[in-house]
Image 1: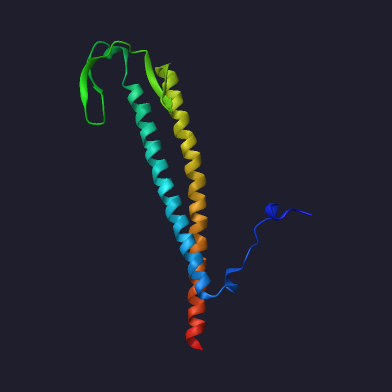
Image 2: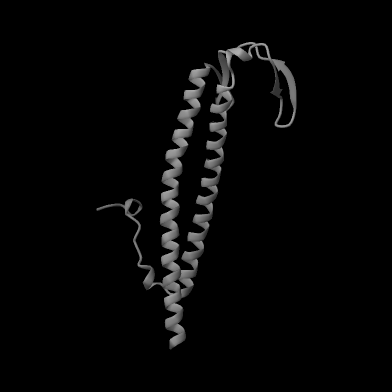
Length: 152
């Protein structure tokens, strides 16, 4: 016999619910959809950031050695600097850790991040679509129940 905490959640047919319960379920689905959509947007932004990193690494070429560049101190404050090492870059690997990598290693690192996010985006897109389908079905059930009640 399974313990109460390990049991699967019971499935309820939404057509058996009354209108106030359907409204609550609809509200919950809308909140979930909003949260998932926000997560999707944030992942897209992170993917764009990593794609930009791949492009920026390709801009570091031996022919640019010794050229003046702008070095960011903050998002809006830059100082001039000279590019002295065109073979290596410092990569932010997260949580305040930085690693010296070759340009090729850095490109591979960021491309792997882009691919990882892409797979997560695809999974999230499927989940969002399923939630949207559930919401549409729920709205149809609610409309049907409203029509039935008004016909009485």
